[in-house]
Image (cartoon, rainbow, N blue to C red; front, side):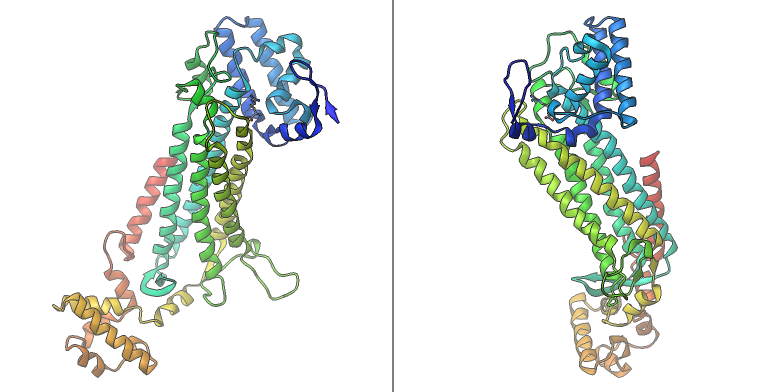
Length: 461
Ligand code: ARG
């Protein structure tokens, strides 16, 4: 089967039609496509290519198309390939032959590059906002949980006593960098390709700076070949979302672990869990597992975009048509992951008594006791060795370090005695002693929360 086209080419083969069309995906660019066209009409009018009456007619035709699409009345036709040709064809239907003047001095190559930048700007801003909302919930929870202690882990083995808020604030640090990365990408991409034409510009005297400004871009792109044939602005944004996905998957992984019976540190609200079709007792942390899963798709999207452009010669190559799906999917998956995780964290119940209970097994204060010996003049290496011996003794006796007999401590080192030893063995004091900048002592975490609130506030203002 084949489909007639008119113009330069004879009928298209059916398989080619299926391969060629992108409107089932790129229809989602319609808002940006209409905005870009309206700015282009303004540019053509300023260049004296369109009369005021023609420009007005085109603008109102484009507005009617927006209404049709919004009302769900617009018929997307795959034979017309893509969002651009569907809209242009409808414009001609609505306003007559003057509709055919819209594409003067423009190619779909600079058109789609413009649409994509506008779209990425809009969705990227939304995702960044959602990152900020998640961070804000984390800050609230960190503030509320300031008193709760928990182990700090390395290798998923209990390492040192720390506090829950300090752990939550670590998540917040990742999100702050994600937010910055997204905004960096948005700032760099904010240039307008219109006027670049298919590859080598247009002879019509378009005021590109005016068009760029009309669309809220900082400036016009500086090279027509680059503008039409480069998508690193998408690679940057989607890579930032992939890194965000990796970060969300780490938070997700901790929620899975913490909600297990083995840890028991948190209980997720029913609204963010599922049960099992077979095992009636189950309450599964699906929200966190799905967020981990979405991270795989986000990483995949960034890889797709890079491979799409790899070895692509200048200028535009049709390969680039496949840039839409990874972009759209990445924005969608980042949004839904952030929203679900925000809800899950806002409603999760932290089980402080179990977290603090975890401090009583695993000799977590060994480093703090060694540090105490250092304050008594013992070189750290030697103190480390002494504590290693004491932990070995505790393990052999089947008790915690803090439960070893006083005589064993004193035999290991004469300073290990009395009130000073008791203080060194107390996990709460151990946390408060670690008052270095960036550490878990309460005043430091309070300060970190305050600093974070200030910087998020300023970034969102
Ligand atoms: N649908 C196309 C894309 O997204 C628009 C550009 C088509 N350009 C062309 N020369 N066939 O890339």
